[in-house]
Image 1 (cartoon, rainbow, N blue to C red):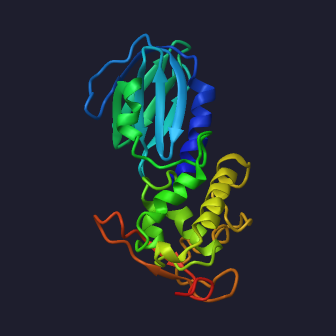
Image 2 (image 1 turned 90 degrees about the vertical axis):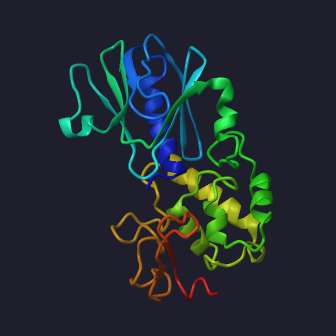
Length: 264
């Protein structure tokens, strides 16, 4: 699932492959600058904030992309390209001086703007546990602003804490023994935020632990509740419940929980 840890790992791969490389030919194929050509610029930095990817160039511009659920990046070797059916979904193409090409595929958010304007675009995001400027107290403060809000809804709101997606929100609620729809006021936010930050960092940086919450990499047993509706809880055996998402309502995502381990 494309959550903050996914984007962090992606950025690490892209950073190794692209930083210092000069773009000799490329263009944006989507977004407000569709048709804009990128030529002669050098990639200086690749950064993330939550689920947002920021590719900075030496002409003081930033390429902002967001994968949402379907986007991806791929790099091909000199002389190689993508399959024809995939090329039709390319939204960013960057061919480098060494012959490699980076392809931004099926990304719903593609925009280029002056780097000095990054704050205007992502400044609304809350603290990110995967950034050096992570501020746990600020994340707790933001979550506590709406004490009657359901926990899962508050955690999915990227303005409070950036980087947690549906998988991590459900798993963290289980690990803290909190019902997902409990009001924020009834939750130990300091402990929950500390756990969420630690889990996201482990997933993003520890080999073999990407989005593994149970410590087991066995298929069907890597998560406590996420994706396990109708199956027995790995801790107590109670059948995991699920509330289906509500289409077009970002506050009603699919939610899983164990009725015994997370009592209402």
